[in-house]
Length: 271
Image (cartoon, rainbow, N blue to C red; front, side, top):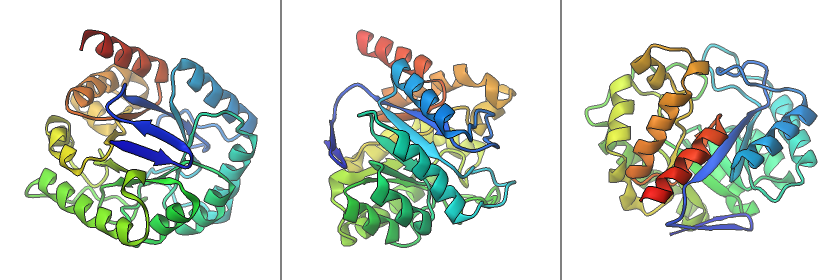
């Protein structure tokens, strides 16, 4: 299996990829946002030194208790980061609004991390036009809106149907299959039992033959299980990482890159 992301090629099976998080916002849920771009770039380089294979940048918090910022402000913040990024390490652009994507991707970025559930093919077409890979995340409804009332008869069946539909949509939009990544969307329009079921049965999504990303870092479900705030959830994050590796995940989006890199290296040594 291959992932092609704007000149970067990743061949699987291989050691899991670590995606380090840089939030270009003041109100990150985990309290690690940085609005000063030089400081954010410095942090990104530190994450690379700790073992990050990909840097994920976003300028719009996914928190549902915050109003969306203006598209121009979001795009400008991301572009300022891209203009200062001189590393060969690929960038993942965390945004879902086509108006922002249209401004940003021509300036750079290798992966579009779209948490908007692809209501249309516009972002897929923009990725096809630029050569960027597209990360397709399962969710229901618009981001920034609480969906805690959503219930599923079978969450894994619903995710499977969703991915089949969205992969067909991206193919019609001209995006090559090897330029797609799948994300089951932990915590997005899901309850605690849904998230735990995804972690237990992740191997069911291997049938799509696409890299699976788990955005496990400091998730609400970890806090619900352990009864602790985001800043204290790194040990729970590593537990979820180990479960993900054993069930076939390929990419992990994390805040604590060093801990994740050490965990994957240790797992590789004993497997």
